[in-house]
Length: 92
Image (cartoon, rainbow, N blue to C red; front, top):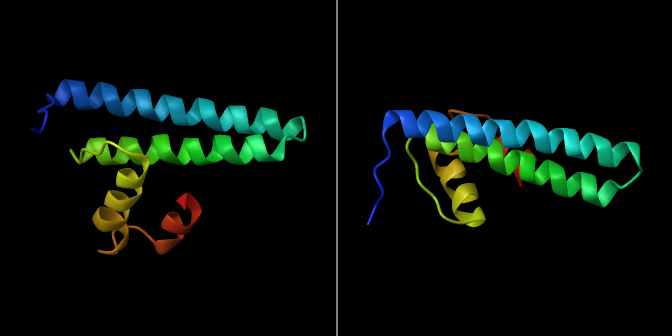
């Protein structure tokens, strides 16, 4: 059963996920400054995940897994040309 979210809830969810993305980018920067490259890559992946999750939420596209987020991002924004394939390459 699909959960219906109000516009207010979607707006709050998008804001939360974007803040998570921004904070996670800062964590990646902190890791790079300490030469922790694998940790920085991990943080950058999660920053992308949070940002893409925000985009999907904004468009009322619900997912439940990381692979679902990747799949719906590809279907909803890459395949149809709304966004460049470069975004998908970066996220993957």
